[in-house]
Image 1: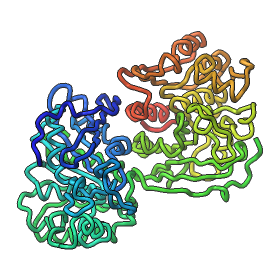
Image 2: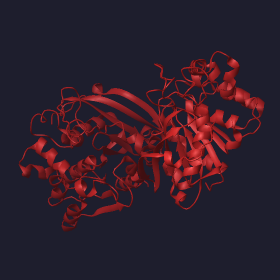
Image 3: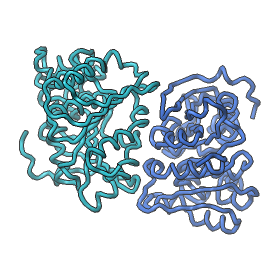
Image 4: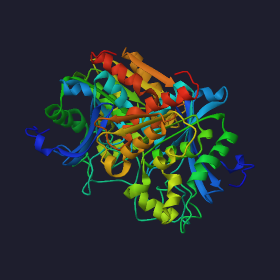
Length: 289
Length: 289
């Protein structure tokens, strides 16, 4: 990706609110890699006024934006206690010029956190580089976060994105966690549709965005926590834990995997267990839990 | 209001999700007093599967609906711990046949929790009777809540509504609390507009929906907690704590009033302090806090 040299002037404030003695701020900026205006939200806990704090990147699921997670999850309460910043990204490039689809799991709101190589997607849909590289550079230059203490997490499509980032670029993160992640996208409807559209038919390319495939080649082993809802209607058709867990066992990758009885695919599932996830990351980030 | 005899068959389930080991359920039903279809949400904590639990009624602010509060506030986490049900009502009657206004603080989403006496509002805008009488009857008949252990709370217009209900009908509630309430509606823009439209010019009528006026005539004294945001842009123009606090002092009404430095009028303010409010109500309801 191109070097980002002077970004401060590109940050356009959208809103800010006091929340649990910290601040939730929303900005937009010109993304070089996505070639469009992108927005993000950042929660800065009260400890950030005293110095740099560890930071968790949260990747939302289909049809969400950066504005949803902090509101719906209750995460700020725990982040404020722990002294952890949370950055929430958007789920796709945005704007009139950006290609879209009539499918709810493709196009706007469904960027799948990958770098598209096929048109009409390739010009703007570079979400992998955006999440892993451009956005962290921007955050590190503009906010009191510690770039060496970074974790990543997400929900559904965002859980897939977080796992892929942690498995492909483990040196960037201290820990990874996911709610309801799509674990073997190459073999389920949502993933096959997205990979075919964004990457083309050549299945070899798909492997670099498939957590189950990446488990077989990754070397570093990060602390990893996964929660799946026992009553999630997509569990067996789209999320498919079995092949992932089998690959993890074969690779001796230490996954803390939990099936939560009665919970569905919604944000209520995330809200119910986000405290566990933030404390899991806090431990890996060296914070007092 | 007319007697509600057989309501079970009128409850139409809209959604349900597991949340903090309890259940969030949303229903619609035919309201007799509002003469239209109304919706409400109820959070039942896990303790409700063992027997009747105390219940808090939450009255949302302008432009919100019953679907917003549980999602945005984090209240279910604490309700689950305490063993408290939460019922969230809508902010006005709804439907194509219901009168509306171009003002964002009037008409749909802005019912002001009063019984309108002027047309075109009088037919459907009977929110006071709905909140204080019809909805609790429906809840008590259909869910495992203890009708004798009821509390009421709300935000902004809903804070006004909660205080008015507690001051007019104190025998129905054990405690009342409010975030950012409109405390003297008869003397501020939002209130004057609503009262003129819904009730007419005769100011004597307004007094029964004005918390500051009601303080001078109420006999029972409920535990009352009020939080106002120190950076709330509406504090001095619409919420006006000073006359209310003066009236409370004169009436020797024990109000726990807190000004929270830095907080605005948003749901983030509510989320930041909802735990205090639920524990305040739990104490009055005899729950272990």
